Amino acid sequence: MHIAVVGAGSLGSLLGGLLAREHDVTLVGRDPHMARVASDGLSVTGVEGFRVSPSARTTVPDAADLAVVAVKSHDTAAVAAQLADCDLGACLSVQNGMGNEDTLVDALDCPVLAGTCSYGARLAGPGTVAFTGRGEVVLGAREGGASEPAQRVGAAFVDAGVETTVAADMPRRLWAKLAVNAAVNAATALARVENGALAEGPGAELAADAARETARVARERGVDLADERAVSLTRQVVRDTAANRSSMRQDVEAGRRTEIDAINGYVVRVAETPVPVNETLTRLVRTWERGRVDSG
Image 1 (cartoon, rainbow, N blue to C red):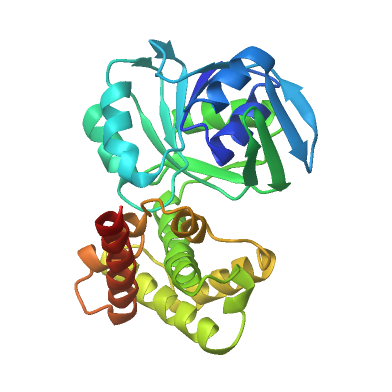
Image 2: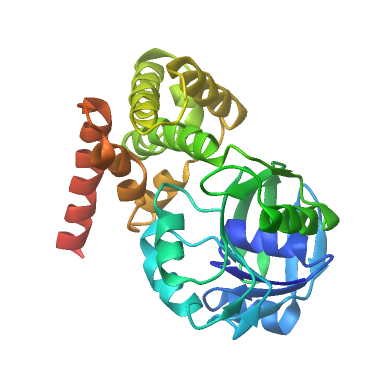
């Protein structure tokens, strides 16, 4: 299978590297990382160590059997426009936040699948990605139910040794992931703490409140996600990733735009009842972003 991984940063590079052990992979990302991969191959270190030689470029290819989209949520519209001119068999989003699949569906003629990925990765330098934690890819039809394209993509991932589940309940899984992200990302970014700081005390209370609000909004939209389930998943992720810095904290520390609009901001935008914790976290992060722009 020819797989184009669009957004070959840390996670995209790791997934692309794993898939390249079995498939024809094209990484699409930014220089100097892409230039180094094109000349010397991709080195994967950490949990597993190996080197592969996928194609690497800064623009999407003309055709692919599958596009795996791993860009930041605020880049989805631009990537969707680029992929609209690509002859694709299917597209899979493994992005954070909500609304990415809808943006892709509006632009593409191929089946668009929803996915989550809990593998851990960190770019260690041009041409090198650190594999920091084993995880799982869960994928399926974005609206739920059985999906032949999802089965085909899932089998391709399994063939490459990627732990993969093809799920028929992706709406619930996406909202569960959103609840965890809403609970962890903004709080750790604003407080500049590792995820483990939310395991107890005021941080744990804040995270639980954000997760409960998100679960309530999921139910308003017809998705069965209990408060207890959202809080339990959040606590599990905090425990399992206690020493990690969340992606939003990394964005803030690097002075980059965050994905707040697709995470806590999405909860605020679609809620039918007040969500004060998510609204406060959203306003605080947006205030930081505005200050970053004003000072830039």
